[in-house]
Length: 382
Ligand SMILES: Cc1cc2nc3c(=O)[nH]c(=O)nc-3n(C[C@H](O)[C@H](O)[C@H](O)COP(=O)(O)OP(=O)(O)OC[C@H]3O[C@@H](n4cnc5c(N)ncnc54)[C@H](O)[C@@H]3O)c2cc1C
Image 1 (cartoon, helix red, strand yellow):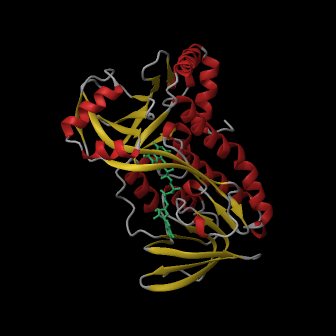
Image 2 (cartoon, helix red, strand yellow):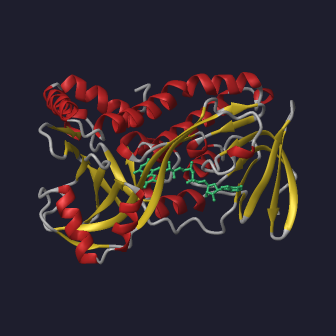
Image 3 (cartoon, rainbow, N blue to C red):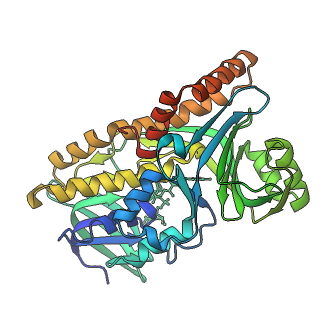
């Protein structure tokens, strides 16, 4: 049974909450994690992790358990119906890989495997905060219970924020959905990730084992249609949309569609509460920044907790340090993905030309490329 009090309470055991719990496991604090779902190992989406995220997962001691990981050695960025392209490579970045494509489920079980005090099937119903502590009411095995903590960390993916007093959120509906699946192509992927911008939305193909993980963003009604197509027709549509760089597509797996929104809390802290991961900022999946940013949230929060005196835990001074430390990276990630979308989804001919020149210029300027890569890999603070 979950206890009635803890030093740190984490609400949500997705990859962000679980990573934080893991980072704090030797802190000397009592850490309790409440997760609504019974099992978290059923997410079919592969995740693109940056090289920086690999370093964090290594420090957490879980990287070695993530067996199905495919290195991304270069990223090919292009636009449909326009000239110009740019190639970002691990060699130019001076790293063994720009990132890795991993199985979401495998990562989740690697993180959860080593956790203690993690309660699955515990749904938090209400949270409230006072000067000295925060409290959560939750249901677990048919009972409603309460737990108090000096610091409550909300990592619920953004599902419960609306109900919390004092949180100001910004929201923008992209009126797009992402169709995700795994496909096979005639040509081998050679560890290249493709990001192709089209007026309907970006399309990403990421190397994953022998296959490619597809994230195809498009209008909701088109996404619904794509999910309902026969395998042969879907593969044909994909070939038409992506072009001939990998030849024809030959196989596809189960398809799923996710609605896309930008949603973020203006301030990721409140009295005795820190909001992190998708709960603090839900981004468009273009450039695969979401969990990478959430993992840095978790890592930096754990560092602040570990370096502060015990009586500082959950105080406004500690939360202020967290806010300041995360501001640039959070807003950098939000601004980067949102601007990329605005610039690349307009179908105006002059803008297409400007984009073409921008991609070609980026390709010709190694210093600019290194700057961009380091921000994408290690966050806005480089
Ligand atoms: C199509 C798509 C592709 C993506 N690709 C990438 C990518 O390649 N790279 C990348 O970095 N990011 C990617 N992302 C983003 C990434 O999936 C998210 O950033 C990441 O999953 C967020 O993790 P989280 O732990 O913050 O939230 P979540 O994964 O949403 O986890 C929240 C957890 O909280 C639990 N919970 C919710 N409410 C309660 C409650 N009341 N009580 C207890 N528990 C609760 C939920 O059950 C859940 O397990 C992608 C997103 C999409 C939509």
